Image (cartoon, rainbow, N blue to C red; front, side, top):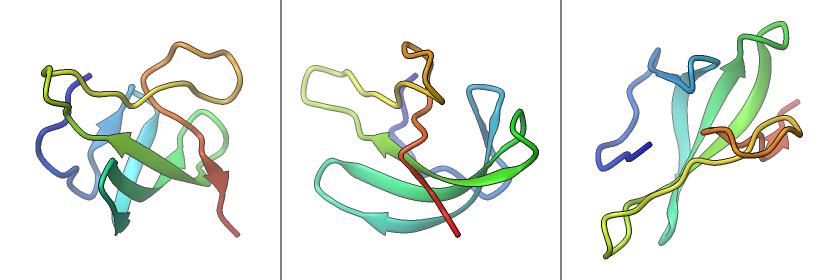
Amino acid sequence: MIHAEPLAPGERVDGRFRVERAIARGGMGTVYIARDELDGDAPIALKIIEQGGDGSSASSASTGGGGESAVREAELL
């Protein structure tokens, strides 16, 4: 999944994570507060790795299965 543009509030990632807002941006990507709709709307931090020079990008892993397109990086609250 390539993300060249910032994610908008309400946008869904991997059909599961609903973006609320960006909370930080750095050299590798952007961290968002999101909700995991498959885990009772639990708040999570979602890091989207931005497009690299080779045209690739990542927004990987999940709640433990690996290989999915969104990463549960940290629990919020």
